View (cartoon, rainbow, N blue to C red):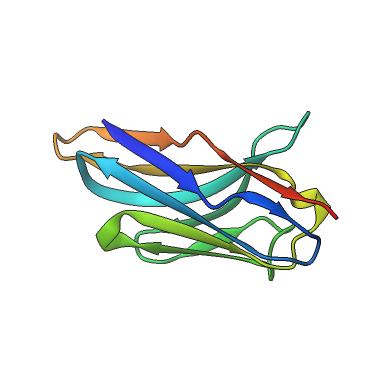
Amino acid sequence: QVEVVESGGGLVQPGGSLRLSCAASGSIFSIYAMGWYRQAPGKQRELVAAITRGGSTKYADSVKGRFTISRDNANNTEYLQMNSLKPEDTAVYYCNADGATTAGFKFDSWGQGTQVTVSS
């Protein structure tokens, strides 16, 4: 079993910054890709950013140039640096990890989410 835990959310003023962290733990052999998703009230969950084990990244158009995703493969962690935050970035942010366990099974694990609120 693989557990994923997010941290770092909170309340920030427009234009401010936050850094989210995500740690995966358990019987992990390898994590192929990690990603951040978000879900605002009344909206569907959407991809914010993703990163492969090799470091390739992709971003939602709405966050390009403002958010940066990174990961530490040795520690099975990922980060999302969010700058120039806007009220429309307000959402619950979820971490996702996709990989294989030491027993050879694939996993696709989600965290419980962390609230990000951008408001003055």
